[in-house]
Length: 225
Length: 227
Image 1 (cartoon, rainbow over the protein chains, first blue to last red):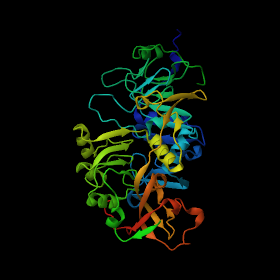
Image 2 (image 1 turned 45 degrees about the vertical axis):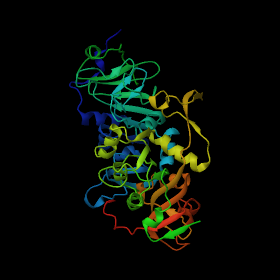
Image 3 (image 1 turned 135 degrees about the vertical axis):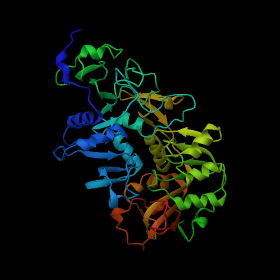
Image 4 (image 1 turned 120 degrees about the vertical axis):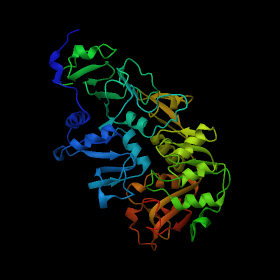
């Protein structure tokens, strides 16, 4: 295996905001995008007007604007995280079955989700730890994972205990099979899919150093991946 | 037959023990709080409730659950920071939970209203929520067979109704309203305003009056909880 140190694009690991900025930069102009609850929501802070991205929220809206402030707060206008938001010119509203038909029907270009684990072939686990007594709650996670053309994951590479969240096969209950195409972490960007996992770039480590943290064989992604 | 009633208590008076009740709303948006309170007061019990969540805080659906009136919840996201009444009942084994991915929940409700006997969907394929269900490979993708969810009653909230029962909603408060209205045998709607027949532009009607049975007006601003 050839180790390409040139994959390293940052001297240090990326913080949450830097990672959000990177994801935002990678979203093609004109895309329709759903940002999951939590860390993925940060991506909206870095989308530019020139990109002309339309944000979807699963509770029935396209053209969602930033979080509402002060007098803008309206109980009838919330996002999937139940946070009051605003509407942008050109927004539209629709009922829940249409909102998920939009998702399932492959009309959304990208969704960005958090994860507990992602497998080398893009299986996603992000909804349930499977712990005894845990109350399961899935929401729209399975629909988003299955429906969007591209599923990007944002997460830290390692758990608090230091285990890699990029795994050969997920040990947590699955959200979707073979659905994740890219994984943005603090230490590297991974591409996943039927061909297995490859590394697009690394942050604060070489591919060789990254390999020591991840228990599956890593290779450099072809240029332009 | 469409009826306009003067009180929420009158609106829910026909709900029987053992009914399946759909309740609109996603978070507080579109939640028919006054109708839920009336359901609480009317005493109906042994209910199966269909809602995206399983009650929040100490109001509405959460109180119905607390009082042991809900035998089963069909929902996508029961666990929240303030779902303590559901959590307690669930941990005590006193409430049944059918957990459904949100899009499957919406489509199963839609299917009921549309007379569809079931459908195959890729959502949930290969996960524990598909266990025991029929699956097929269609167009190269694994898909799961899902069945419609019918209800005896739907309680929903809209912005305006006209004299024919046509409804329009407001922003993301629309959510499950239109599909629940079609899926239930009896659809009971609370609206902020009733306008004369002909005052709603037919091009903007979201729920045609054919799906609506009972309407009660709750003037906007009288609902503190919904803010």
